[in-house]
Amino acid sequence: MLRYLTSGESHGQSLISIIDGLPSNVELNFDEINAELKKRQCGYGRGGRMKIESDKVNILGGVRGKKTLGGPVSIEVKNKDYQNWTEYMAPMDEVDFETRKVDNVRPGHADLVGCLKYDFTDARNVLERSSARETASRVAVGAICKQVLKNFDIDFVSHVIQIGNVKDENVYDFDYIKNNVDKSEVRCANKEIEAKMIAQIDKIKSERDTIGGVVEVRVKNLIPGLGSYTQFDRKIDGVLAMHLMGTQAIKGVEFGIGFDVARLPGSKVMDEIIYNEKDGIKRATNRLGGIEGGMTTGDEIVIRCAMKPIPTLYKPLNSININTLEKYEATVERSDTCAVPACSVVCENVVAFVICQFFLETIGGSSLEDVKRNYNSYVQRLGERGWKK
Image (cartoon, rainbow, N blue to C red):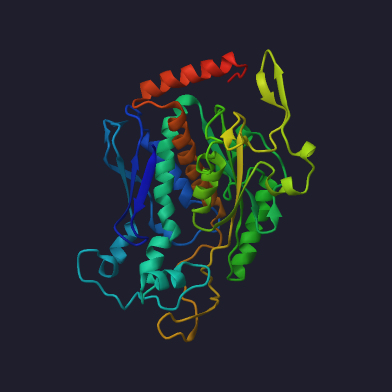
């Protein structure tokens, strides 16, 4: 089974990921992986940290001559800012615990509960790991998974559809988003709405506040049957929701028309099934976002994620000192005004991992060649039942 773990602190030496379960003989394009990492660092409203870091993957094991070996792949993303934090963060030497101590815990972060749970008097021990800097690891993992899936024409795209109260109500096809989203500073496919989003970010920044938004992730060229109805934890939408909700600052996930299913009659929610000899089995609409009964239908997967505003504010909220319990204004760490564009890149790669996990589980095979043979056999069987790719 495909799985991964991440390790490392925001201001530590490196972020480390180990991904296990990849088939052998997958040729990796490191330029494409690094391009995903770069996109995660971009976007209007980002803070000073993005000017320091320039993330690139360094493969420590599991790959030889750019091809996977079938064993665990170990990935390093170095933290350039570590050079400024060595005396505070060194894991094997004496460090200065006082100068960078954080005991005025910040609302909206893991600071307070983390200190209570792990018995810390310094929230630095919490925030270094709970930081969204960790998402660089998940982008690297997802980018590698995309390298597997592109052998089967499975493609991903993400874009920003809302920042604050500025919302893009337009419906775009997959290729239009793919061709335009990277040209936008806020990863919005509509130039007119992009300008309004930028103005919204500028306004919030002038108020020393932060703003969140909504991102949409789409996946196309999938086969039916990834996931299962047989157990709750094998439903692909359930697993996707778990991984996305486990992404820093995500507070809501919906598929297809999402919460609108609660206000519409069934006839306006379900996707009618049709058949013709040319196209095979199809659905007339895609209101359920490409998933029925916990399984992919073969239509585009459509997922939207709501990101809360970054809780580190330049006009700090009231809080307490974790050690004295006195009232304080929360500590200000370096902060972004808006990280929604970066969030879209993170969520896209988080989705890529889950899709790859279910794809490899359904199709099977230890080498890429085996997976391709099994895939062709699966598609042929579906074709005999009336489904066409």
